[in-house]
Image (cartoon, rainbow, N blue to C red; front, side):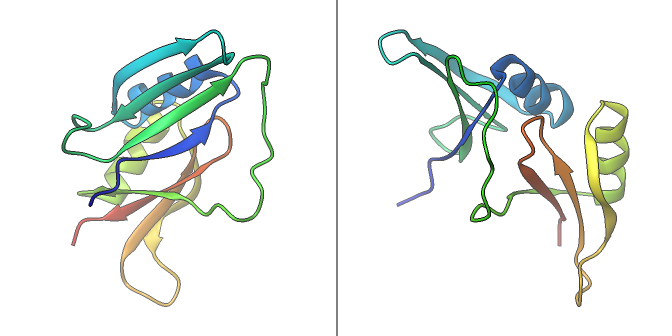
Length: 127
């Protein structure tokens, strides 16, 4: 077994694709409209879906925002250097909501970035 993807809803799919590809450096792997269901799916990630877990961005036509709720926490991305990643993400227009530094009660270096819909993405330093 393996984790295939995590699905999150997007109020503006092009804006979300731009964030994940241009700000976080992922690739748009595939995108498809489903006119009968009135939704579009886009899959983004750092590698091919056959070998990597990816993110499924779902855009329901006519819906431009969602309530995030309090059950979802965050997506986590491992990076070589959290400080450098935050600097680069900031230059690319990303919103850093928790600057790089040691985690609470620990030594692992982390940071948090918000995507355009408000989903939290944790950057975790490679150990």
